[in-house]
Amino acid sequence: MHGEVATQFGRVREVFAELSGEIGSGGAAFAAVLDGRVVVDLWAGSTGAHPWARDTRAVIMSSTKGVATVAVACLVEDGLIDVEAPVATYWPGFAANGKSEITVATLLSHSAGLVTFPGYEEMLTPYGTGWDRTAEIIACLEGAAPTWEPGAASGYHGVTFGWLVGELVRQVSGKTIGRLIAERIVEPLEIELDLGTPSERQSLVAPTILPPEPPPAMATPDPDLFERMMFTVEGRNLLHTADQFFAAPGILGLELGAQNGTATARALAVLYGALANEGSYGADRPLLSPDVIREFTRERVRGTDRLLGVERRWGLGFQLASVPHIATWHAREGWFGHDGFGGQMAFADPRQRLGLGFVRSHLAWAQSLGPALVDAVYSCLPTREEPESPIR
Image (cartoon, rainbow, N blue to C red; front, top):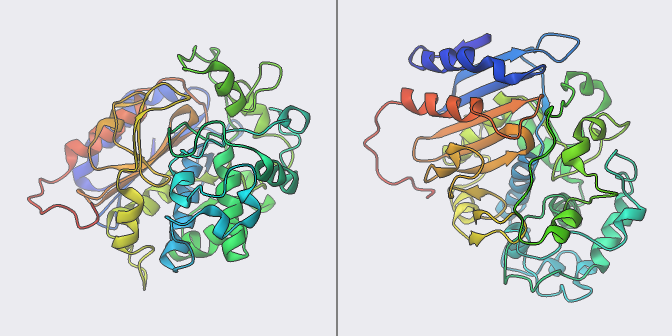
């Protein structure tokens, strides 16, 4: 066990040590930021060849979606995007095939019905080939028709979210989403995070290790659509091949806003700590204003996910507290953020002015370590007699 904790958070170190066997043959890290100050920064395990270190990163899987969402929020902050406007206002090619009225809010809340596109089997493999054909993929999404009436239901856009949001950002800003994230999030906050990790930093990324057992059976309401959402080819998708996919040449360098961001736990905690603290983390100007944070974190969707078959609540791009289905922290009212395949998590609690990040390299279908660390943090928090948070 390595790293530091503020005195009152010693219990967090104890819990990490007690449950460290759960990190398997990989490594893990956990961090917490309270009132703009790092109060927990711990790591353990290895990257295979080396011990896990302070600057070791993990592939943060779908926690990438939360970071991509912040990039869109930055453009809303700048007055360049109105979330109630049609996506086609900013991206004219998006309008084809019944998509002209889909708003940015509908897209961000996983309600657009664009979870796949026809013919992907001829272009992409779950082993990493074809994923660099960005222009062709965007053209396919432009030509795709929604699978359901946009806005009538919500279903997790597990893979397409990254391409859709990335192209929206590019059309509006003229920059790739990775470049915007670097300029508007990473550089001001001075955090160790990339979407499109350059080759010189890829050695910092711990190799992804799959759980030893096969994926559990999913009780999805629409198995065929779930497989297409996951871009399954010949019965295989990232649930089966993540270790090979993220090790494939060039994959970490792509800007896949749904799944291939890399970060330390500390970076995620600092980002969400800023969002939990009215957008501020000691910078000259806030990352986002309280009004924009409020807009992105008020409830837009509540109900059973059409693809996952579980209760979900969504803001704009952010998961909100819901009936727990992966870990106990899902039930904490007031939080917003995004988890990721295998145990990654990153979220903000504005009521406590708290940001948390947890990453691991040996993935798990179910875990107690991450939720136990979250519980330990909450057990150490000072009692606050406070008014309702201004960004709630």
